[in-house]
Length: 79
Image (cartoon, rainbow, N blue to C red; front, side, top):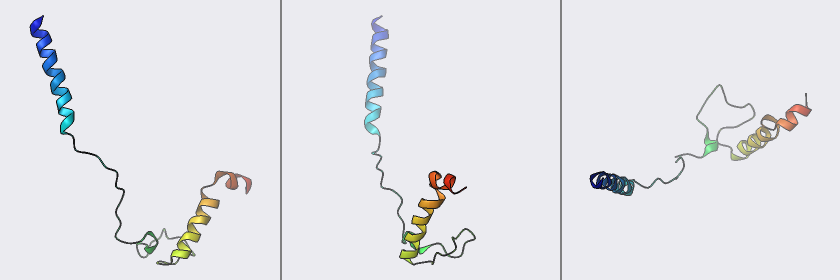
């Protein structure tokens, strides 16, 4: 009985001490070298009306996408 308690105590302390060796996990996000509106060059998926490198047209496209493309309430009422 005493031997079993000793083994359980050692296992419990090993488990507790193993948690101290973890590296901290920080959420720093994705680092980008360029601005998001700079684009990736020519792409078949590029939205018509968007000019590469133009921040204003990029913001306008995001607004339109949020309003008409991803808003289910406006999509259902337009059909």
